[in-house]
View 1 (cartoon, helix red, strand yellow):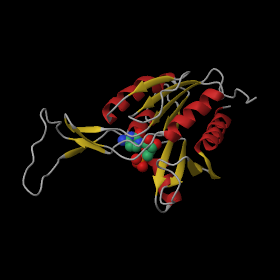
View 2 (spheres, helix red, strand yellow):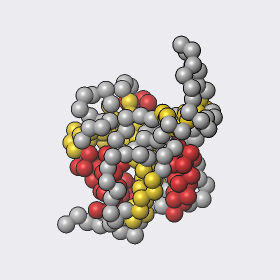
View 3 (tube, helix red, strand yellow):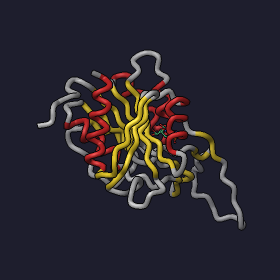
Length: 218
Ligand code: C5P
């Protein structure tokens, strides 16, 4: 049996993409499947934690035993995260949050125009950075970084700029890994330490990541 390393702990995890509406029938999104975030949520539950899963739109059955909050946009995910993070010991930002949203969501379907059209986008809040910036009741904050090059440099940059405790980086340029895949390979970075986890299933990796986090708390 797996030792209940997280018994009595609360873990909040964001997962999946966000969906940014343009009008009543259109939106901007990305290819995140939510698989890694859901695997982390299950792993944390296996280790005895109370788990809050904040999920963007995905094609995964809503898990039993987890407190799921379903959201659509980054704004909604931000609101849910700021509500749950202060009650959490650990916050893991695994969602692929859209960096921008439409400046205005049209009330009616946008009509076809000439050969070009321009959309004005505005920046979304950085959800994990706002959790890491909590003064009071700040959870141990873990981010993800999907990179196609210079993984270590970019991951450590994000760890520092977003004031995270730990970041899990993956190389999304490798075929069969990362987005939408069942497998992944990760390197975990802390300010003064790193650990490379070889390619394996997201289920196995999730358990290793959650155990690594639990080890830092105790
Ligand atoms: O900066 P970048 O998007 O690569 O950082 C990825 C990390 O930041 C992930 O943990 C992701 O969930 C989080 N993030 C966020 N809010 C955003 C953008 C990214 O929480 N608006």
